[in-house]
Length: 204
Length: 278
Image (cartoon, rainbow over all chains, first blue to last red; front, side, top):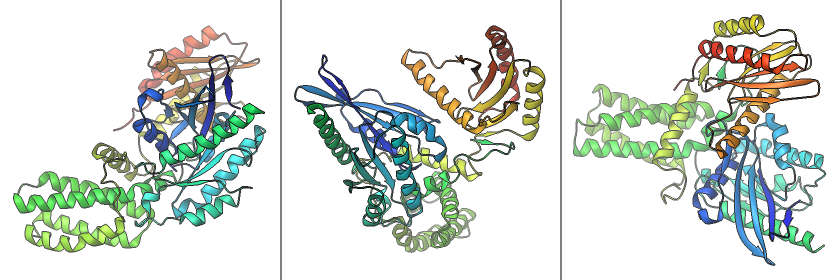
């Protein structure tokens, strides 16, 4: 449900970072906020418990060039991952155009990852959105833990796990949000496919 | 955020473990660096390494706890042998030279447990300052589930009795005291079917959201919020810097009267309830 303003020649799209608690959604936004040129970026708003868990959402507006003379403004949101905050998640998901599903690579989070993806599908369906129709990128986060004392899942297993819950396999990005690799790749991929789908709707 | 005895559930249960696990390799590398720093100090200026030892023991304490959290036996053994050596060095049971020799043999094992190093490029969010923050946070987890606010049973009983006698009158159906993080501290009232745990979480989120609105117009926060319903209304008011008092009342009660009462109660509660620690 992108917001297209024909008089200002502007398209606003909403991208939500979704995933289980503690998987690094806010860290993704923090990294983008830290590394991107401030010229193309608004102020990051974070509603959390003293820089800790996200209580409601984080919000970061970006502008990403233009297509067909329309300026593209992207609003990045995160949701609170903790199971309890489902109502807040539903609110943030309203009118979403694209989703980045941030999966936690730690072995202990294998089930929470799947549960969160199922929860995403449920919450979208309440807003009459179909996960299989929505632009989606899977980000396998915390790859920096690979080879350390903490057991991690291999990317293939994670992809199989998550894609088994989807009709079409989604593009995947390996990332380590705390150190940076993969964060911009994910953002680029989701922006690309989201804008493509908005563009498609625009023509229709 | 709150240790309490009201029979409520821990809404972030298990989150600490995930947190600790995610940060462990970075902490291990910080520890290895601290040991190296200590070794350098021992070699160049023996007898002047109090600061370096302090840093090592600080990280060691946190790591031992983390190893305990995740239940990795290999790491536990490794760390306890390191701890013994450091204690021996402090007590004078181990000379500086012996310490250098024994620990140099142990370091590669730790490095292996820490996995490939990825923070050297200096690109990431983990720098010295961030690392200090992580250590502080994990140190707090040490004493159970972060004891930021500890409200004793006596205080809870006192607050509950005070609210029951002073606030609950005709027209008010429920009064909740919650903290900024959405934990329920006290709930009294007779409104049936009210999900107080969720209400506390959503109310805190709502307060935090309006705080952001306040910042956008240059205010620090809004100290009072009021939502009018068709039959029942909500009143939120800040109590000190940490707590929020939520009142649910029906429309027979006048808002002005309630505001007066709550303003008075907020002052009393601020004195009764403990401040955040640390």
